[in-house]
Length: 303
Image (spheres, rainbow, N blue to C red):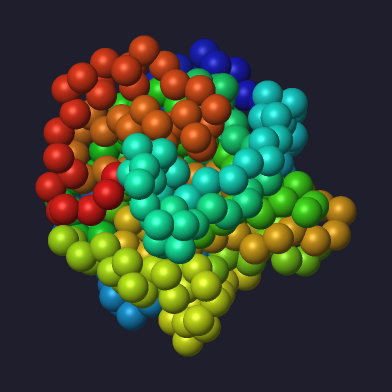
């Protein structure tokens, strides 16, 4: 693991040693003269087309071989901090929404998950995933791809930068993300299984589409489910607020490890107390304070 002093200012950190910048020039939006870098513009255009068509875009081999090696080593050393939790919850993981609902209401249907999390307060700022997350060039690239002027890191002390750890036999059930879009970096892929499945645009602002949700949860809508097999070192941008998604059961002997880099289109985003406690098993004072001053999501959807 690198020196914390060396990367005391992660936003000023170059990424050439860990990111394949010759193929993905995320920090080079402009040429020396101030004009737009055509390679950067082409990369953004390709990613935007994929998001518009599939709700998901993959950049294979985003990390260099050295970057991937270091990321694996760093996460391996931190994994003892990520105890596995075998639990059940609904899609929304919001217990306050489930009171009085019929057992077959899709908001009530309980599903199993076996997974561990390294949360942001457990991840040093000098590791590969933290450097990528904080890099201004990565934020600029993500913002351009999702049609935002700017994106912001989460203010949430647990979420924002997370590593999901899914062991053999583990899985992550169907759910939506709190944020509009999420970036993931595959650090370790399983031997088999552990595929990413999603239903692009299953809900939209102001429309939860409970009927469509119920059909997917009951296995009645295979035509709307798409599958992606990510490889170690791949980066993916995904519109997870509107697209239902899950990770299928991991098979073989290798644990699936994925860095989840969450950005928002506004500053100060902190997750709801009940959802945070359900997902991570704990909350902080920041979550409790934020709940006292909670504001609407603005799009009429459940957070």
